[in-house]
Length: 270
Image (cartoon, rainbow, N blue to C red; front, side):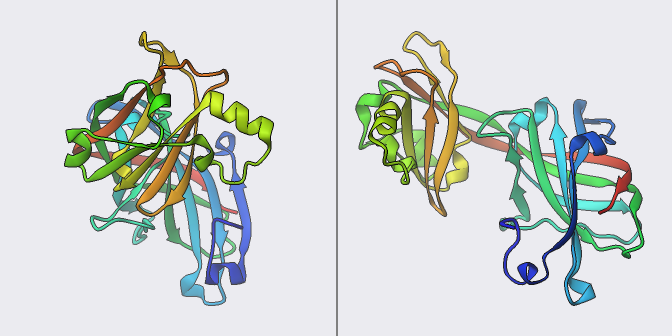
């Protein structure tokens, strides 16, 4: 499975339980008076040849208005089961990892991954999983790029980009789809898609929205290509884009920490 690499691939996964319908056990919580629902989305039991390297991989789902402003999570502490510690993987220097939103900037739903100690094979559930975690939330500043389609292969300049140490360049849409070669599909892509290359701290760009020159939102699907400090974000509409389409680039600023308690009961184990 792609989700696991290295030595974990040598032993593989024993069983997986999925589906929010099975695990809608989280209650409505108030983090600083903001309603936030926490539920279990998936539990994966990973066994290794060495017992101390076995683990439970737990995916939690967050739902609520505040999730739209949250980008990272960390500082997870468990109160129950007693003595258990949760590990956050792929963290930054401050111990935070990125939340996975439902598509770029889709807002009120996101998932996060925790690693827990592996219980005895005979144990079929966790009676209670309780504790708290911390979300990092941000305000958003907006940079407008007018007439985006006619600025391909140009680097955009804005004091906000410079302040955050990023470079933003409008590129050909096909650069976000390197495997696409069909002439007809490429023509459709040119008509309905725009792409922006971000160089630097790619986390600084929270979302890109498209609008008509009159300010009407244009629904689009987002995709990305790249890694590390270079990322190409593409936005594709269902119909041909207007000639002078406008892009709104949202950049997160002023981070704040939000402590989120959670309590999950009868969490089934695979």
